Image (cartoon, rainbow, N blue to C red; front, side, top):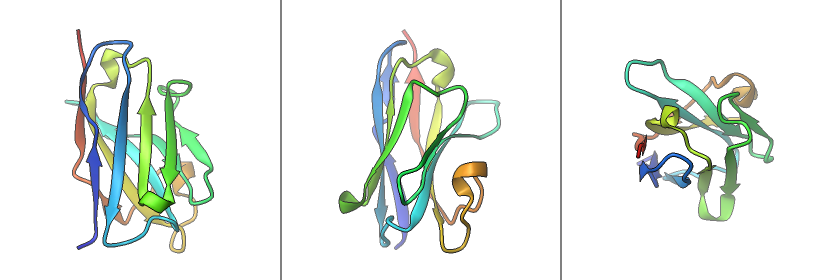
Length: 126
């Protein structure tokens, strides 16, 4: 079964850090762009960060300088390191994969996703 599984969410105090993981099962990520999205209660889903198969990265304005996306193709996993967390970062975080063979602009416009994970909850609160 082809799936993405996120992990690493939890409760953290403002200013703290978390590292999210996105592991793929049933397919390999090496030819996919991987994007991270988040959705807070009552808000629309937004693109947070993206990484292409070659390692080019993209970040939303609200997380630039605080979040870092990386990938380990040997482990078939993508990571999102989140530092200096704020209460407004509270959301369910999802990873999604887009085949670069089918669509090459995912990390420019956060479109073209083929697979989605079910999400992991990040709560930033004191």
